[in-house]
Structures are given as structure tokens and as C-alpha cells.
View 1 (spheres, rainbow, N blue to C red):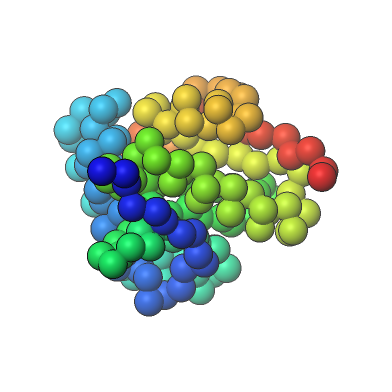
View 2 (view 1 turned 90 degrees about the vertical axis):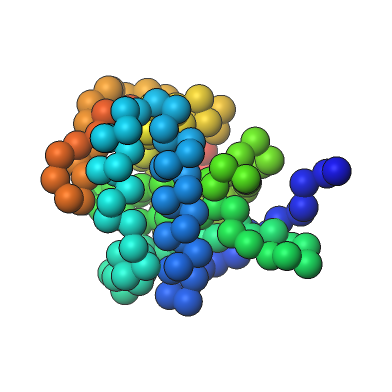
Length: 167
């Protein structure tokens, strides 16, 4: 049986619970492939709907991938923001959406928005398990380090950058 088709659409505050569910699932299932259980627990702890509602109110843009069949459900999300002058994108896919093109479609939606906002390059703090995903999208590794977590502490990551070619 072929996987259900999906659509990518802009997300709003009413989608915060779906974004939360995807974020937790992605961290818990896919993130666990590269991190210790205590790191996974710390990483997912601040995931709550109000976090995304607040981010949207501050100008962060979200895209949501959902199945387009009779049983719709969230498959992943991407987020785009400008932080300290850097155009930043994050992409998370639920385990049931992995290896289906969902992450790529979500990333490309966010990149297109970044282009319209004048981005010449995109920056990501990639989890250890997402490095190959970002490399396939044209990113280069800049450095290895740690991403600060909202609740304190940090998570090993790979800082990556993609130069955008004007089309």
C-alpha cells in the first residue's frame, strides 16, 4: 500500500497542538537514534503548544505537512525566522512521515519564504541525525558544537549553512 499523499501549508496558532505532537514524536523516535535517553528527554521537555503560538506572535513562520487522504494528520513542520540577522530554518518530521519527501517539501517551503525575505544564505543547527538530510539539500558543515536548550543545558549539533543562488 502506497503512503498517503500529503500537502504542505502555512500553519497558524490553531495548529500549535499538531506542531507540538510532531516535534515530540520526531525528537522521541528519530532523535533517539543519535542521542542518549536523558538528552532526548531534555530536548523534548519544552515542547508545548504555547511555545509555537508565542513564536508565531514574534514573527516566526511555520509550515505544516498533513496527509491529504480521508484520515488527515500531521506529518511534519518547518519553521523560519530571522535571528541576530541570520535566516534560520528548522525542519522536523514525525516518524510516520520519514523517508517520504515530507522533510524536503517542508524545508523548501520555508526556504522559498526566506528567499522572498532577501535571504542569501540559510543557517541550521542540525541534530546529529539530520546532518545527511541537510547535506542532501545543499548545506555545508560549518562547525560542530552545541545548541542551547530552552530549559538550560545544550545538545550536540552540527552548525550548517546553505548559500542560496538567486533564481
